[in-house]
Length: 428
Image (cartoon, rainbow, N blue to C red; front, side, top):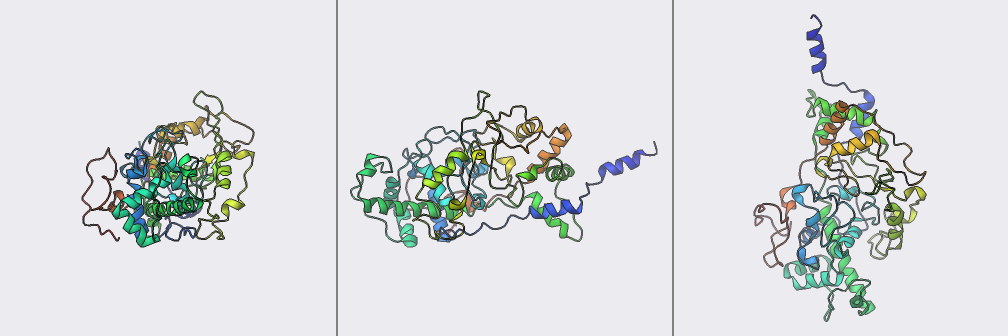
């Protein structure tokens, strides 16, 4: 038929973007450098980052000696663990989110119970289901490990004298109560420094440049060539348009960085009893390690005052932090409890909302079923996959060389042997 060539030409033509869609695309790329964190004077200290990198992979911080931060945040799995629920010494009740891009978040954890990365690091180390460590043992581990202690001292000054120290000293234990107030203060000071070093390392784990970013960058090229598939471009148009995803997912992190209640049911199908932000905020308010607390390096900064100025209401009960969609194709399972194995499963939920179980009338009223066709859902998934960024530099994917270090560091017990690191200067 005469119109067949014309139809084929139209089908082959890439989707055209409106001026509005072009502006929205530019607003989502590129990902800027991590924002400053004045509450951690060593946040961007290269020496602290190397120490933090060593500690991130160090199972010596755990009670069992075989669990590290990298157990749940494995470099070859986009710094997640591909489990529905995090598994350390025990099995937790929430999914382990990626560390990539975490420095951009205003609140940490699914429930926002930490307001800085250094405060966040304190929780898993001492959580009985995660590393089950104790801050007193962590400090003793640094003292007993020459490589760690020498670098700690060069950055933060002398380590405390803890002799004799009862093992397992952390708040809420008899070993902790047996310490004098000055000993507790000294341990807290050193433990905070450990966690500030961990933040310095994690700040280097950016989301990376994605095909979406390269596509947006091509807008300014004389002869722009798309690095995204037509399906992904159509998916972008749906994402910022008909799907309404921008209500919660916008900006370079593709997240509003706040909290929402999707009405996800409990495993038994009824309303969930996980309070989410409703309890996380109270926990943050009660913590002396808040960004405006005594261990902050800038307690009067605007960033530090964020927690004090935040307000929550009944609508935050059962609400969880909106995750960044950067690298989302590599960070499943999804949702705070890892209930959805694939992106397709997530989109299927949003497409019908059939399993939604509202806890109260404060649940997300703006959330409506997408009612998309299979082709439209496939386009959305193609766009989400295009948000996967280049991996971090190779030296950040494993611990630094430690000639006098503790037992072999846990770079990922399930991965093949990592490349040699002798060429990496320990002062990097």
